[in-house]
Image (cartoon, rainbow, N blue to C red; front, side, top):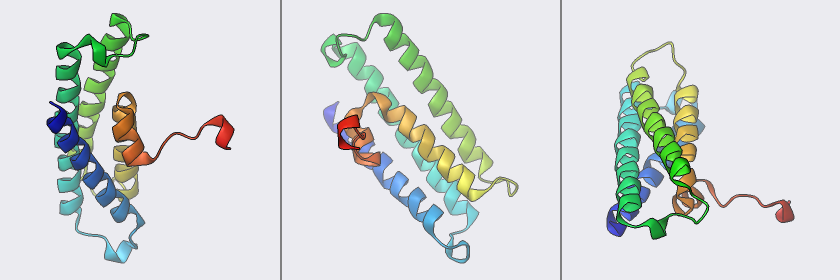
Length: 137
């Protein structure tokens, strides 16, 4: 399970980096929309694996949960993550539409990824950096 989680994290990180590259590239250097769609599909696939690993881990051991995670909170997280993974699938489907801006697709995908990884601090820190604490401001 640990290896599957690490592989899923690595895949999420690679896709997030490619999406950031696409967004930061000048319009004239952007790859075809077909490639953006592939990246969004890869993101969705990696998110599905990450989500499945999180669920498997939660079922394998209650020790993986923080003490303040009640059964209700865990069910709420599961519901929220299911919704986020479904939204990633919809983003990939929208990549074919020329009326949807590249930037919006990429930013939405990265935003969903941030929310999906909120329960996995190691993945979140690797993708987006550690949270800024009040003392470091």
